[in-house]
Length: 271
Image (cartoon, rainbow, N blue to C red; front, side, top):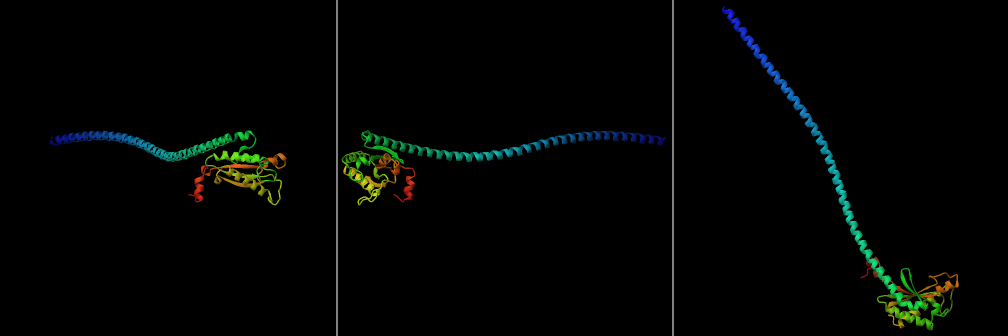
């Protein structure tokens, strides 16, 4: 009887123990499955975050490259801006220089017009003409009117013309003049004039002396001879040779108004 009771108690205790272990197992299994699901969920979330991070890294690299490109563009733009500012400064200097030269050119044109006005009566009378040669104003007189053939002495009409010209030139301020003698190519050989060089020089000096006597300051005038070596026309015709026999009174340019004068003065050691 006692044995039967003990056996029954053990059986009941075993059954109870088995029930506890099954419930614990089921609980642990459920917990494990929950944790596994959570781990899977976390791994998926982690994978998404890693993908997002990778995408952000790519975007960051792209932005860094864009920043580098923009910085390079900025550097180029700054250089271009600097070059543009330098070009604008150069352009402004060029415009200033152009304006200065324009004013000088206008002054020369006005001076030439004034000279034409001064000589208009003599030009209308056919006694001389005013022209521009190599950028210089030139008063031209035919030697056939001024001198007899082969002579260096002024005729009466020639002297009157030179005196009138000298008085007009004397009223032009701050200008120097050079009297140039020219001949045709017909040779001359005598004791006074061995060649056309001497004839042209003598005629130029005669005009210079007459101009000085007429009141032109001697320091403002000089003489030169070109003989037949600077013809104004062909020497093949009578008309051409007549045009080549001439006296030219050149208005000497003021070098101080020419471009580069200061640089030339420095090279020459001028004050």
